[in-house]
Structure formats: C-alpha cells, structure tokens
Length: 264
Image (cartoon, rainbow, N blue to C red; front, top):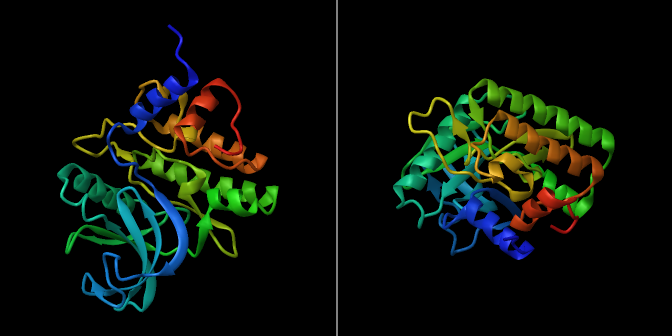
C-alpha cells in the first residue's frame, strides 16, 4: 500500500537515526566560554591546552578554540559530551574517529594532532579560521563559480586520499567542508561516521546528512567509496547552483522523488 510523504519521511528518519544521537559538527557563532560550559575559561586541559572560546557543537562533542601552551599555537579541541562519555559504544566510535584522522595526511583534510582520554575523551585538531561551505551558501552565497570549482577540486583530492587509505567518510556534505579565509583553502572534516577497512569490528550503522546520502544507502546497502562520490556530486550541484540546505530527512525524500528545495 503506498505511503504518504509524511510516512516516508518518518521511515527515512528512523533508518538514519533510530534512537541514536545525530553525529556531526554544526558550527555556531563564536562566543566567550561561559560558566556553564564543561571547561572553565582559562583552565588547562590535558596539561597543555588552555580554553579560549567555544566555536561549534555536534551530537557527540563540543569544539573549542584552545591555546597549546607548549607549542604556542591555537588549536581546535573536540571534547566528547560528558553524558555520552559513559557509553562504551560511543566512546569507541569517538576514539576510532581520532585514529582514522591521525592516519590521514593531506593538505585538504583537517589534521588530527593529538588525542587523549583524561579527564574525558578529546581530539586535538588543526584550527581552520573560516566557516563551512553550507553556512556560506545559506548566509552569504558563494562568491564565484570559479571559487566553488576550486573548492570541489580540493575536496575531490582529499576524498581520493581517504579512499586510498581504505576509509569511507560517509558524511560528505557542505557542512563538513571548512573553508579557510582568505585563500579559499578547503578542508574535509568530521570523520565521526567513517568506516575503516582496517577496523577489526567494522561499523554496520548508516548515517550522514540526509540530503547527501546515496539512494542505495538509504535503501539499506552498506556505504562505500562510490556512495561518498555520490555525496560529493550532490555537494557539487548545490555549490554550483547556489542551493543550500539538505540537512533534514525531508531533503532525502525530496531527492528520491524530485528536485532539492532551497529551504530544506
């Protein structure tokens, strides 16, 4: 019996997320770290990283700008949420993200510099001063088709390296492409959902940003390098056509049945 669009959307949402937290980094407007944040302003974290401000948040972690006192440089530190740090499955996923990131060395991939588990799991990464491509599309629009093509070429090179290492990113979207100002250097970020061929206990969950997931993955096939390339193709369409969005389950349903909408 045919299902209504609302029923299809609910089915896609259950398939993608179930009861799990949605993983992925959403950058927010920078603001000074307040008293209610996990790491008080000015304290050292991990014996060397002094917190300066909060720069983003996601389903599993919060990202801060820290000062590396030992090397006198600013870094991004992704700290696992305290309430999730008690779940061994999520802790393993977070640590796998650090291990995958530490293995990838490419100028267009956000570099993982360090990781530790005290007082709770955190990942130290290079700090990219700028914003993500999704925010640029939504708030400002892309400056030129030439710059959009330049970003896509960089991300394509990065994804090729990822696949050469036996890794599937599984969440290629504009929101995981950081754009450094002013030289328009693109950095592929957030390997929290990535699968790794070297993992002795490979992940079997699906996930990602709904409007960018390949149709076969939405229908239950395992993610692959080809599904990553499909996601990159959707990114290319949205960047070149100046269409933002694609973050909701409704976006996935629209893409399977029609054209993407600007306000998804």
